[in-house]
Image 1 (cartoon, rainbow, N blue to C red):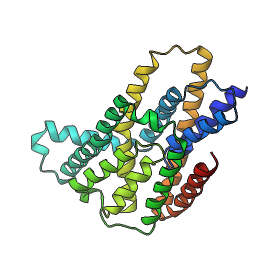
Image 2: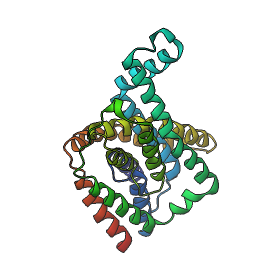
Image 3: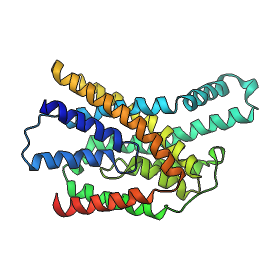
Image 4: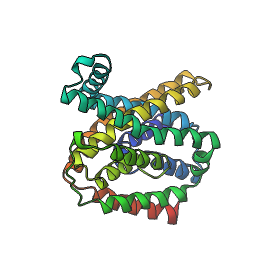
Length: 278
């Protein structure tokens, strides 16, 4: 029963913190450190848990943005294979939007592969004080853009905007730096409207998350997992998906209302607590 509660709590934690700008990986690492400090007897492979709960969050985001995804994918391939329709302005805008998503995905993809190969991330993940410091960085940038409104709509996102947002996502592979926070901050610094930055950020989450899930699931098949443990992972993933769905919709309203300062305060307080006491 205790083990079930642990997986339930971890699934909920992932689901809540994945979409909002507070770093889900940072929160999982903080919780892991706390449990280890209090000598709790837990037998959880956090890397496997992160892979499976991330898959739950990914499914939730895909469901939320399904209509946009279908339109973009359809427009992308229509533009490529039907030359007679390329003069359609909306079609061309959607095609370019897809290309910008691809461009913005590249920096994080390359950096993630290099960091994994060098063992860079695994070293950082053992340093909870570093996570606390990165939460302070997240707090600072969320505060800096708290009053930004921006003017650019979806079709006005430039190629440079895509590159800069892509590098912001690259930085967010660092534990304690929020992915959604970094990409939304990057978009708003580039004068994107709040809703435009939000949508670009979450559409951008999908390809990088799919790649992460594929790599993680590949590793998963190389590990021996009991049926009971696998069921616990599935429960955690389902909860992660449910709470990601709920909190993404809630976060969309927060961004639209320009209330990111609340998350800045939260990250500031948590970062200080982690540095001083954990």
